[in-house]
Image (tube, rainbow, N blue to C red; front, side, top):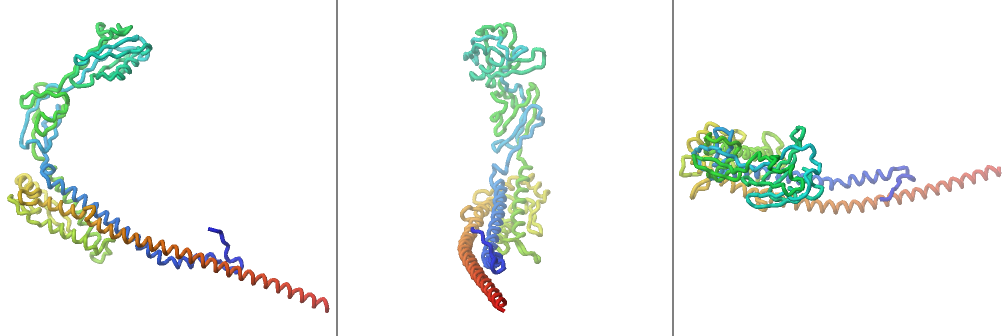
Length: 456
């Protein structure tokens, strides 16, 4: 944009005048921008509400399937020897006696100590390994006959045995450690193929087996079970054992039962999710003279809140002894939110666990209350037909229309501003010309006066 200096002829700040006139002309655009901001703020609020509905849906889904609701828990009398976790396939109400006879471990061989790990002192040649009866050779090149060189050659060969160097802090601290690649896999190493192999010759006892390769061995109710891993997931149906320490002759008791605390946590999550949704809708409403939120007056939100409240009192009419959510201890407060009567819930879980599951999950011909909540919430959070999807489509359409109107208005204002500046520039030019003529006439009058005065 060209730089202009207004008011040079008239003394008026024409640039400021134009700017003020254009600011007045921008009034309609500002109103449209305010409308756009209002719409985008509503969309943000709808998105927040949709997030709360989806969070509530997630908590409901934990209650509407037996695998999620009736989780099993394995309790170990002592975790000195193993830990245990149970899944839905575990048999609840069962107990076991587990004895850890041997944990699975890989073979480890350790060499004698040496003062220098980089010194080429073992020569070149071949290291011959036998791994579970299968021979494998590792070539040590000339100049690589140090502990570091041997370690690198073994690791590069990828034969199922790895090598490392440790420092034991003694006067001859560097020791070569060989580790089997698999639990239960044994190996031997022959160093006679090295040109200076005597330093690592087993006959001189520099290589010691510090840990033999063994499988895990446990007894479950006096039944021997073996594994190549310290994690056993088939020794007990539906239970995973993680072995920590072995002590033959010591049995540890383990019980498997329904995890009541997990069920309580899931029901609490349901209550929390419900409260989040209801509280959000309430915050948007005009109550006791409050202005409400930006979504005040939206019938969709009010309808969802009413439907959820109605579902709380739905009679599921199962074959069990429980037909209402209130029988699980869910109590409605004055503000519409829920709390849990822990005494009622604990009693239901301990005395009528099957009926609790039937109420929530349902049975043949009867849809559980959790499933009813899930179906309703899925409909309202659907990416194509849900509440947010419908509101977003409408808002996006309105925003696009406003953007188009703003663009057109900006173009008109740009032309109008150009016209105003041209007119003011023309006025400045006219005044400048008149000023020049006035100055010329004043000069002529001065000259005439001087001539008349001189003649006298």
